Length: 469
Ligand code: UDX
Image 1: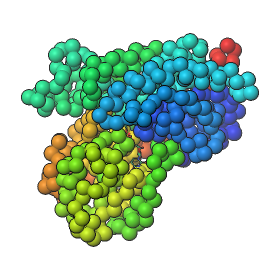
Image 2: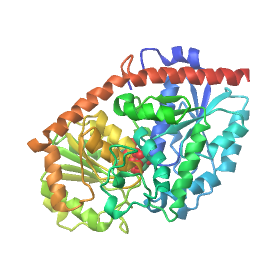
Image 3: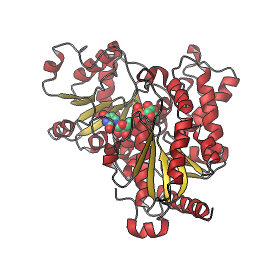
Image 4: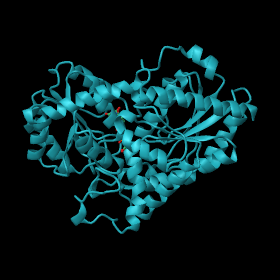
């Protein structure tokens, strides 16, 4: 941390203390990281923190000794755990099965006389059911969206595009521009694989309606990154909006990692030359088939660039881990590559040996890369990742988009262009300039600095009304 101004927590606690905030993360890695980072930011501002969470993918309380944790049974069966193949069914299912146990759990927290009164509930935007519970228990709800503001706009545009008959996307229109949400093309629209296509419209409608009914919206982004889109979002969503990110610049996410981070990543990086290594990771949900996995492996080897590759167990369809790689693969590497199951990503991206990030463009990964000035190779899989990828390649112009060409020769050329060739120099320079620009938002008077100040004032005013009750 180091971006939170000069007042100590004890000074801030005098101003904001005895104000308790309940936070309710959605149980997926990218969402948990941003909610727990937000909790740490608010704790540093003097608020008392209570985390209410599902039993599935529960955070580790030992890593947050200053918070209280309350879990409730979510009713999920093992066969219903998240998979890329039907993320929407998982979201819809949890919004139904959690309603009663969440309300009971929250009610217990609210009735606990030994604790400070609860001023406000902050939930992930994906928990659309929680607005009705908050209304019933008469507690203000604030929404956290852990995706980019641009993807919130793109999700909102989907229903109008569907009414105009543009969806499902026709193969002949994939490269057509979408005037409603520049610079996106039809193929960048944030569609999500699902057995029931109407689920997406329903979930988006629920999220939009319940966000507009809430007392405020917190976004993990910054005006320096998404100023134009933010101005439009303020018109479209008439509630207070606080854009205070990127959150990980205040508190890193290692303490909320659901998987053990392999620290050999750092000892291996320590032996590599500055800016020589391409880091490869496709996040916590995305998966690929065995043929694509092999193309990636051969593209990496043929590029002759050192690489650190995260292969998450279960992320290659039908395989456990590396068994599809030819036995000669690791020998061919001759120490030039290192493969782990999960890495300490933020430390990796901050390491001087890293020169590029081949990413699925999840919003956390995208911002973590931008904040370290690391240029990207974009290989989005679903949903908001496609929007983020287009912004990286065509708007901020700090990366190259693979555009579905997952073939070893193309991979080899793309890595070389990003990392070494003069043709990639402008991209590498822009990545450094964008990092410098985003750094400004945390300085005194910067956009996120000011917005965090407004947010703490707003939360305290909600608390004061709750106490007057
Ligand atoms: C999901 C969706 O895929 C994404 O589109 C949405 O924006 C957020 O939720 P996920 O796949 O988890 O995200 O990606 P991302 O948002 O990038 O979050 C992954 C987090 O895991 C990052 O904070 C990253 O630092 C961390 N991580 C990733 C590790 O700690 N180690 C790793 O090896 C890989």
